[in-house]
Image (tube, rainbow, N blue to C red; front, top):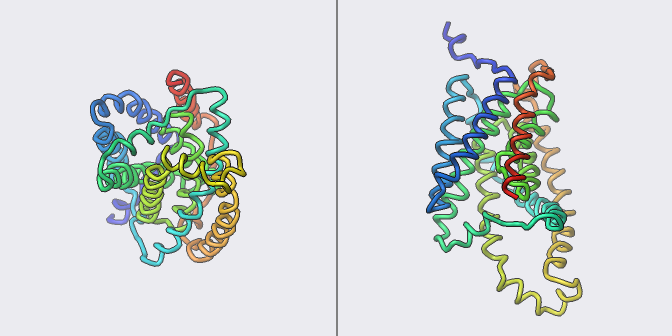
Length: 300
């Protein structure tokens, strides 16, 4: 009797996508209201009430357990994964933003929040730690865990895609998608929610420090450097630098994931039978995608 009580309850995929679609509507419509007056305070309210609390409740409701373990030995690998992935994501996202800039006027909301003058510790808590805990609890701890018995490619892509969609901003789509793939793969390999929370926090911290450093003063100073001028602009120089660093970073990423494959692969997740997705199960997900497009068009 005790075993039955603690057994994880299976959620229909249709129900999962419907819940995510509903949360997306709430996030888009209530988020701006909470953020009025103080964007940083708005992040805390949005992440806690619209992301973390629903995820925490759903995990309790469906008895999701077994992923709160964490080993100190994971710290080194995950830290290296995040550090190596950062220049790759930055490079690919740079090309995406250059492409978008031909059609839209880009507005970097995150950049404005980071450069708002708030103390660094405030930014690290509200913009790095809080989103890491809330978003990983929902997107990996609930969404991805619900998809456990499907094919790995489907699990990783859907988890990352939902994560990217929830940013509800076209120019902020590719970077979260790529980062989401990384986090989903880490969660798939380790089965550890604290591991991806740490990875997400580290990535956010690096992003905050980078955005604080990459400002108009830095661009002007580098623009006067003779070597940098050979590339035509500071932006071109940084893209070339990211490409070179990214090649070596990719090789390191690949090596680490191979090691993780052998170390963590033999988990209970991999031993369960595969499930298949039915067409009707994807209906709420398609509505989520259409809603995302509508929000982006209106925002643009």
